[in-house]
Length: 186
Image 1: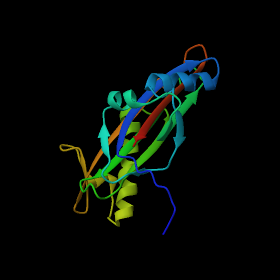
Image 2: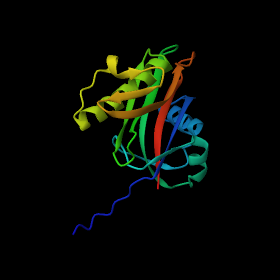
Image 3: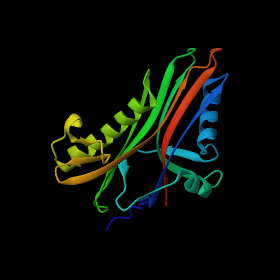
Image 4: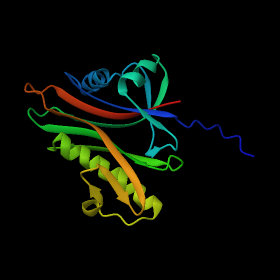
């Protein structure tokens, strides 16, 4: 029998923010503040959306965070000090209709993309990772049902969503940072 201690999150919330500062670290801090998660210790984890996990509103999730807590999250960030440069940070979710199956969370950061393009790409990444795990054929151009906004992978219905933040580099050349995060709660 294993002595492994396992913590499986039961709830997740998506959040995003942007910040500007004289130093890159300050702009990152300001972006975390804008996202409502600067007062916790974020531990970066990989890409699994736990089975039976509930997606909750950011306001409800952030209200539960205690200062100094160690919180697991999938986080995307992008920074620039180039005036006017477009930056994006996005996290995407792919959650199967069957709650007993785990889903995927992706992170994507880019330059020059709109929020729509970056968010769609993050969702595509998460859906593709889930499809390959399930052994299902996946064609991002053919699987998308825009009317219902769901992925159809083989016979499994997958819901996707994202949180995406974009900004343009501050005009005076100060650092600009965007973040997007999937924050996990017990």
